[in-house]
Length: 487
Image (cartoon, rainbow, N blue to C red; front, side):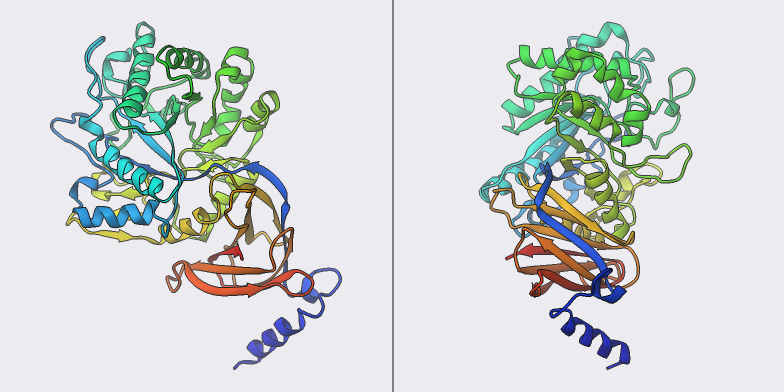
């Protein structure tokens, strides 16, 4: 045993007796505070996104299944459903389903909602069954990936501009898809999202075309168009007997753009749209460097709308898996505590990399499907599991602070759900000793940990007991994520 290990053992023994005034444990430990009695926003849950048809320009010649479900055998499919939806898996509560441009070819023509979505629907169908067998449920949001070519001014797939003559055709396109998912599949669809990164007008040429095969489907959605369609789609859903399905403002690339590019203000300034809005949505991609892709976790747009409509929830509907590391967990912390969201659905959780043209710019994921029909559970899965198991629907985000910028803490209070209070410690730096001062919680916690070096993947650490002063002393390994559940 080294001298440092002897010192740490003595320190951990003595801490149960006394904690020095001032900084914790005589300036040797990071002070962490978790207060389960102080609750912030209600938590709707973490989610999963299966992406099927996302880039192909001609589905008949080049059918696409980016999620890879079609090349897995039944045994592999069952295992993946258990990993994602099962009681011992992620236990996700939210699901995002994309709506691609191939469901109708001409105005007034028939809809084909089955051909290009069969694998996504099979995945969600199996996940919903597994979830409900466990006494839980899912909430589904469906996002317009892009409209049929005829609805654009350019009359081509991924044309930039909506043809005003086809506004009602687009409303009908959205409403019929929701009706299909609800009536044919029995899916609990609760939200319709208007666009996928439709604010990013740089993606097209001046003529409104694109020659970049690697981009996924889209349409340009200026703030005025978003406001108009919140109202139009809300009216269309009500006329179709789907009044319980609500509209979201679509999904800008990040929360900075949602506010700074004018979307939040446009909704705020239109009373009818503000009242029709069912959920605030955006992607939550993060970039702290100023420039083209700058995107901070800011709540300014959310705050404005909540001030006018108290109780509005906000979801991140796509965010990067980054390097599937502790810093990625820190991005989730930013969306929860800085952007103040109620739910998070990362970008495609299951990926078949060869099907993304030019290589996926966000290659991290939970599960990778190989071309031989096998699959791999990646580190991103284990990092994500540290979060999803802690934050279940109906819980509340609780107060949590740490006096070290390399330590982030996410806390979820039980909030009467029957789920245990839980908190997640994220360490993006070197090994650190933490003194976790817990208020309104238990005295015994059961811990699980994932480390970047691959040595631990949601590894059970056993019980950890608080000292007489209510503090829990924990030595956090470098580059790790640890979850504590109250017992």
